[in-house]
Amino acid sequence: MKLIKISIFPASKTFEKFVKYFRVEQSNYKLPILDIPEHIGEGNLLALDICNDISLIYLNGCFNDEVVLRFQNEATNSLNFIYNYKSSIHHKIEDEECWQELDQFQHAISSSYMGGAHSVKLEAKKNYSSYIISVSKSAYLSNRKKYSNTITRHLKSILDEGKSDSFFFHTGSYSLAIADILKSIFIGEYTSFEQIVYLEAKTHELINSHLVQYIRDVENKNKKVHLSSYEIKAIHTAALYIESNISKIKTVSQVAKHVGLNSNKLQHGFKGLYGTSVHNFIGNIRMNKASDLLIHSDDSISEIVLNIGLNSNSYFSKLFKEKYQISPSIFRKRIELPSD
Image 1 (cartoon, rainbow, N blue to C red):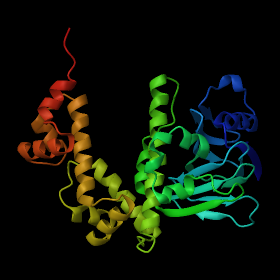
Image 2 (tube, one colour):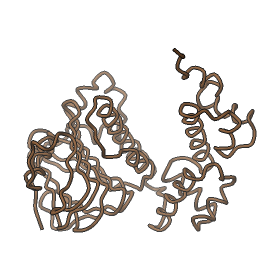
Image 3 (cartoon, one colour):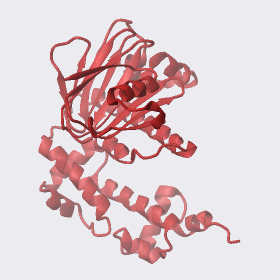
Image 4 (tube, rainbow, N blue to C red):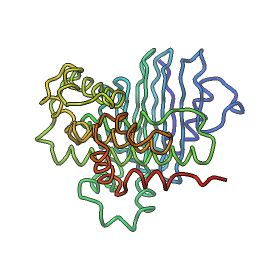
């Protein structure tokens, strides 16, 4: 086992630690992406600091040997958001003996004080798509003090500095909405200004999803969605099936049959894991694909209607206008570039 001690803030220090561990020349790499060399494993590591209050460490890949990352909180009290998309991950606070397993798709929030630490264990040859987003509580709230009076009591309890020597750990419910955001982050060449802005926006979106899920967990602690690991993965498969086959999707029962669940269980799972019904999820996918086709294709409205699994142009226009407050034809005219 290899123990790597790293600072929570800034993420650039974590980048330097991994450069040393990977035994590569730092001059060959530029923030925020570091390729994992073959003698260590495969994949990529991303480290990003956002302003003075957010640190993102994102791993997409695996290590040949077991690695323990010990995150030392040297400069500030922090709130940490932890998630893994591809498999389970192990976490523990300070010097506790037992590791806590966070299942695939399960979100977690921890709070650590200045001088404290928490660790993540990465098993050998296990493929991860995991991140730890750390927020400096004092800086994060200070940068948003104009809105501090709108913080709900549930969020105030975890964002407040509180006791300077206490830990908080919330093993949350499962969230496929977070997985969908994570899927949209492809670790490539985040080197241009607009790409970094995109990555920052996605990080804020992830933080928001964790906070929303936390409120939902607390307010519905006696109404938890009870799903097996098989059912959670089946619902995730259902979402991917809908996205890939939207032109062929006609009924909820069709989706349920494809993933081997009954319609009631599928509806129950979507409500708990996505916060919406299967019907609404399908509708959102249709409208998202329609807007994309209107922007990036020359397909006629009739062709787009068929491509998203509908049969009526007028019904499509009605749905599109309900979502975007504009008709598809006017939307397309407004995004068309003037000819030279």
